[in-house]
Image (cartoon, rainbow, N blue to C red; front, side, top):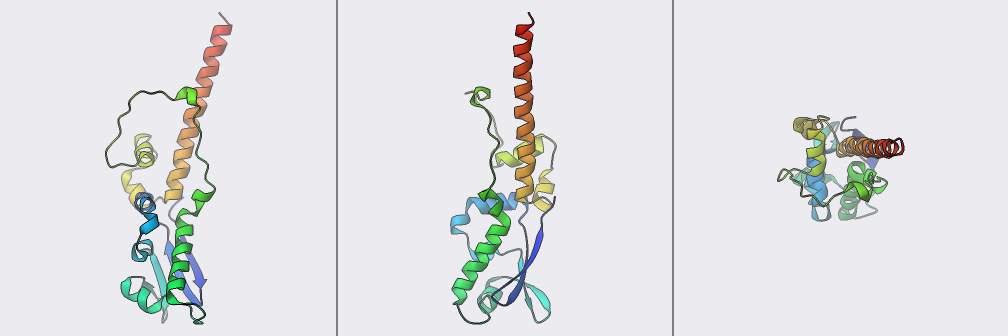
Length: 172
């Protein structure tokens, strides 16, 4: 597990991108519907004249296009953003959150750290990852997988405890 890097060709041009780190990915995901392409493409490079060049306002405006001129640069940029979006967040299309049985949920008031996403807080509290690792090493997909492991372990422990209590009552 670690942020993955992808190389791909699109409309006759070569690109490479690296997944967002988990914390940055959560921030981007929260505003994905109206995010500027420069932000979404901040970890994406284009191969120009034998070297990889970061995509920024200038390189996007002058180089992101359909090399064959079959479509407008705006459509090429939209397709590039969609592809990078899919490489970062596409796993969410098939991700199924671990369901905690309602009988294990209570109306008790809980305390959470302000400004910290619950997934991040859980991973740090459980000692699975540090904030630094979630900022620099793990992707959002990694964070969700680790969160699922913690949640399934918790639910399985609760189910096991529930069964042990039932068995103890039967043996009285």
